[in-house]
Length: 338
Image (cartoon, rainbow, N blue to C red; front, side, top):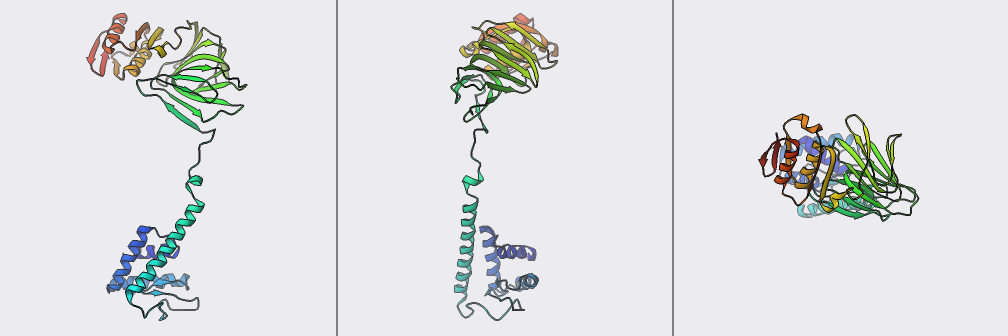
C-alpha cells in the first residue's frame, strides 16, 4: 500500500495524475481523516523522503490537511496549515477544487498541443486507400484519372486518393480489368508482387491472385509493358497474353480473343490450357466453397474448360471431373476431387 500511495503522490507532484488516480488518492486522504494510524505513518514516511528533494512541496499531511511549505521550511509537517481553522469538509472542498483545476488545465494543454487533427495523420495522396470486393462478388470503380476498373471476386486494389501529375501507381492482389483513357503523360503502373505492369491509354486484364500458380496479363488494346525488377518480360499489343509461372519463372505468350479477355465481367469463365489448381481456385472464389484435390499430380494438370457463374456449383464440378477423368465427392460447401 505504501508503494502505491508514494506513486500517487509523486504523480500528483508532477501534475500527471489521471482522473482514476486522483479518485484513488482522495480515498487514501479520507482514510487519513478516519484516523488510520498505519496509513498516517506511511504518508509521513513518504513525505520525509519527498521533502529531501522538494522542500517547497505542498501536500496533504497525515491528518488529511493541506500544508503549504516554503523553501526555507525544514519540517515537512509545519504548523503552518492552510485554512486549518475551518471545518474539515471545507478543507476537502479546497483540495478537490484545486485538483479539478489542475486536471482541467492538463486536459486543455493536451488538447491544444495534441489535438486529433495533429495526432491522427490525415491521408495524403501518397497514402493508399483500399478498395476490396466481397468474396463471391465483383465491383467496379473509377479512379481519379478517369480510369475504369472492374475488380473480380476476392481481390484487393490499393490506390491513392488522387494521382499526381507525374505518378500513377497502384497495387493489385487479385484480378482486375483496366480501361485507361487518361490524357496524362504519366503511365499507369500496377504492382502485383514481383511483377509490374506499365500502360498508357490501354485496355487490359491482370490476374494476379497470390495463391495462383500463374500470373497472367492480357491486352485488348494499347501497349503493355511487363517487368520483373529491372528485367523486361515482354511488351504486349492488343490480342496478346503473357503468363508467368511462379514456380520456375517460365514465361509463355499466346494470342487471345479480345472477347474472351475478362469475360468474367459478364459471368463467363473461360480457360485455355490452364492449370487445374487455378481453375479450382476460381470456382472456390465464385461460389464461396472449398475444393480439395486428393492427388497433388492433379494440380499441374492443364485443362481447357468453361462455365457460367449462374450454373449450379455441383454441375460445374461434375463437368470438370468428366473432362479430367476424375471423380467428385462431397456436398454443400465442401468437395473433394478423387
